[in-house]
Structures are given as C-alpha cells and as structure tokens.
Length: 288
View 1 (cartoon, one colour):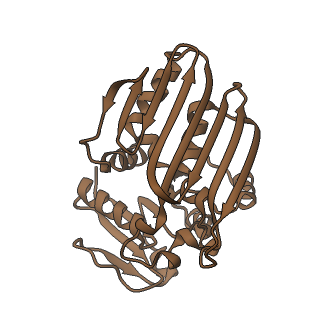
View 2 (cartoon, rainbow, N blue to C red; view 1 turned 45 degrees about the vertical axis):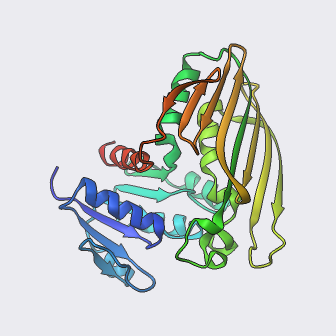
View 3 (cartoon, rainbow, N blue to C red; view 1 turned 120 degrees about the horizontal axis):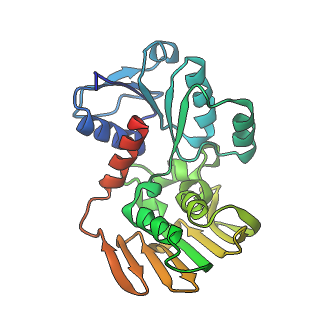
C-alpha cells in the first residue's frame, strides 16, 4: 500500500488512540490533525492545523472525526463537501436523533464510505456470540439482559471529569451516547425493536447536566424480551450480556473478556490486549 495520508479532527483520548494504532500499523503514514486548542504531546511526527481551510486543502486517503458528538454531522458534511471518500466517525453519529435522521435522509452514500466507530462489534466475544446465534445453538432466543455499569469519573484521569465530554450536554455527553456500544451490539444480536419502554435518571450533582442512568425494556420484532441497563456513575464495574434460549444460555462477559455457553467457558481472552479490537476495526475500515 502506498504512503497513506490520514486526517484527524479532534485531540481527545480516542483521537490519540487512533493516532497510536495508525502509526503502529502504517509507520510511514502522514497524520494531519485539526485542533481547536493547543497542540497535543506525541512521540510521533504529526502535522497540526488550527485553520480548517488549510487542513481541508490536504488530499486525505482517510479521515477520522473524533471531536464532540454534537459536531459530528457538521464535520461529516464538510468532509463530503471536500470530496473525501473514506470517513470514520467515532460513535455516535450525532447527539441528536432528529439531526441524524435528517442527515441520513438527505445524503447519498454511493460516492463515499461513512463508518461509525462501534468498536465492540470487533470484539472476539461479540463475534463468536453472533456466530453461535446465527447457528441457532441456543434455539429460539427468549430473553436477554445487557448491563453496563461503570464510572465515567475514572475514564479520563488527566482531566476534570465535570469538564469532560461525558458530563456536558452541549458536547453530546450522557450515558445513552457514551455507552451506546450496548445499543449497537444489541441490534446486531437481536434485530430491530418492536416495542420499547425507557426511563432515564439524572444525578443530583448540578455539574452533571446529562442523564447518568438508563433503563430500557424492549420487545424485538423476533419476540425477544430485552432489557438494557446502563449506569456511568456506578461504584461497581461490570459489562455483560446474558442470553437465554430454548436450548441453553450464553454469557458475554466483556469486563473479564470471557464467553460462557451453558455455564462452560468456551472463549477466554482475559490475557489478550483490548487494543486488538481497535486494531481490527482500523483494518476493516482501511481495507473495506
């Protein structure tokens, strides 16, 4: 593959992760970063831009949008305007459902590739589970519970968590956007939703002006009873999906990186780096 040119919009933790992976996979690649604040520290040779016009004059092979979710659609449109063909957007596409729907209905995807970064879809545990469901190893799926309890205050240790994207509505924060990985893989495993009930909860701390907990109860079009429980101010760290079928049960334990079929361990990735799924996602985006 010839020398590749990457554009990165944003400079947060996920942007830095993509830079690291790109340089690891393509050490001779050139990376150009559009910033709105000061330059970021990096061991790699990077090209920084503070003016959009100069940044977008570059002929990028691939571009990554890693700024706050409230500005994702705005920058996707700019990338399309400048005729970039390969656009990667960190999840979610937008912080607004109406904005996302309007964008999707007004744009054609024939001339470019738009990829949304839901990295759990590249986790080996998810991939193996999808394979088992497609082979009907559990029989007919009766019900499933998806749980993600975490504490966003621990996510970005170098930053005041009250000032982080997660805690700010204007930046697209909140548990639904931040933990939307669970919503993404639920649709992949169980298909479209037919009926839904949801309840959102808010923290008493006024510095957090977003929802911190979500309880979502669904019935899918395949008649699966599905519960999704999200909490990013939890004292307990856990992330799992338990599926019950007519022929058995399956436990996807993303925290401990193991997969259990009928209470028997069939996949153990506990000693593997979680970086692998990010690397696999990058490879898929570049090669497809």
